Length: 347
Image 1 (cartoon, rainbow, N blue to C red):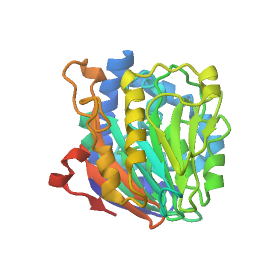
Image 2: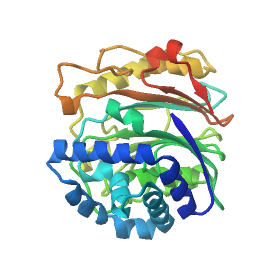
Image 3: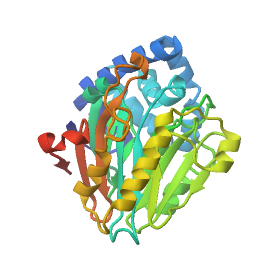
Image 4: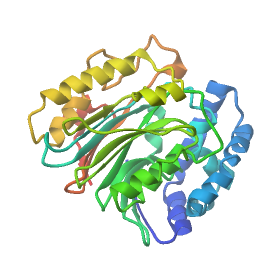
């Protein structure tokens, strides 16, 4: 995974992202043009028109994000609307796609540290689009984040000890509000846990998703966001877990989702595995949970399933374990069950 160090103004950060990650940006554009056609028979031109519906909401929410996207477009040699479309990719045509992911957070009394981790399950071809970004920006925390080329917010943590993970929710709900990937970036742009929650806690997000937010102060919250209702679920015995279905009852009454059966299975399995952990686990212990093959191939460590249609098939693209207490990030590219061969990279 290519690492890019970015600093300066929002436009400068974007420009360097576009120049140094040009190959990954173009790979993302190719992938999502194909996926939009496959999932929604949507041309790239129509996708760009749909992305522009979110422009005013983004401008009111964080106008500097538009500057950063403009910088990426300039650096990668594409149009601004292309990059806006990547950042709104979940809203444009993928609210009905079978995205995966299993996420977890652990702190006291189960651990003296705060751990935040997940598998990101998606299309295997997006492995070639991944970037590890290290962002230094004025008047905001420094960020370490895994993202897809051209997308300015995703999964990671900052040097204030705030981290976030993402789980997709399978719904048809969407409004012309702030794309969820920009909500993830706003969490990472926060100095405190309370600021992070506030940035996504007022029905600002354009489509439903789950954000698992945690901090080195041993605070954590599951936040099921949507444009019409936002639900929060607190930890039980220092643990929070989530897969790809709505868990909070009031949220289920407001937003209809249609998850795949394996989402419920993975949640049961990760709950059992976490409860079997000794106190004070380390990164390897948590990676071992993410490598579990119960209900293979639609397991926590997901592998390609030849019985599924091509557009429904996905696999674990990367695993991430964040030690928010010590500001350390460990990554495995691909399936974590192969970590003995692949090793982990510590940032």
